[in-house]
Image (cartoon, rainbow, N blue to C red):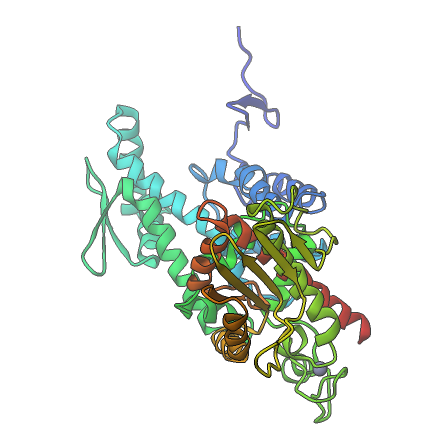
Length: 477
Ligand SMILES: [Zn+2]
């Protein structure tokens, strides 16, 4: 004989504690506690940023979403949970308190953080649940449908009404008639049950993007990236592909991208903690102290920190090419402090690292090109110039470099008669963006199977040094 369940006692069914009463709601204190406990374990762990976000969606969030299919909770509760999630991130140094909220919920390939919003998840689940209810032929489900329809008729809270209003918020007029529930968008497109998940994701994403575009300060650079036709989603490869990037790196780079580094410009325009008219850089005292200036325009840092960044990125390509020519056996990792030697040579190729060309024929002022390969077998001289300007200056920098070394190319043409002289301008901006045409150039240099991965490594090098520059700047404040 099975005793009937007493008030207050519980049993477990499908992993869920059941009681004589419905007391499990996604907003209920116990679910919330499990969710928040898991969150704080995840965000205080040594996991990388990518993995913490992954663990949040796959380990913490299911503590709530599991119940969302059947239980009801309020938007206020869900929004509170979102706020608490962000608070846990701030406390653990994963998010600047003033950084953009909208950006957290955008996909990482667009520069967002890839977090899932509990409110959005709840609404999507409710719409899907209602659609399921109308497409399921099970007789018990039919009874549930009748129950929900009656609730809607009598003015009680019902899944049908909720899902209709949530669908409306997404711009979808839902038609839940059986056997195939569908929805129609404002443009008249029919979204059926199978297409719904993908479609709602897209709607939420484009709304998120619009929100970032309206953020004039925090969202400015991110939106500029999206508008830039020269770069593609690879400029955010460090968010999605660099899965081991520590939390400090990702949070720090987000601070730069959102222009909330504590520069004088930020302090006087945004937080109003800096008073007085002086917005000039505390290091060079020449230009306005902004993120742009600190990471790529300060004349006080050109010979030291900017040069280190420049070399760190270029040497990755240089070692890769040495290996291609069989002048080196091993390639040091991207973060290695190893510097290339000035000259590598065998009977076919000579490679120079930062060695000036001694002009014999012409007067050449700019004779110190970053790297140079003289390929005697293919009768070719390759000049390689690297630079890390600000985002807007990529194109300008490239033209500048081509112009600057024109006399040198002419001189080399005379020194190596019959050789092809080619100059490659490797421009990766200070925030890791590079143009589509750079991909083609690097493809020519290291081959089509390696170029993508080489560029990603160079991007990592540039970004970690940019971050280092920002940190050093902060220390000097
Ligand atoms: Zn300066």
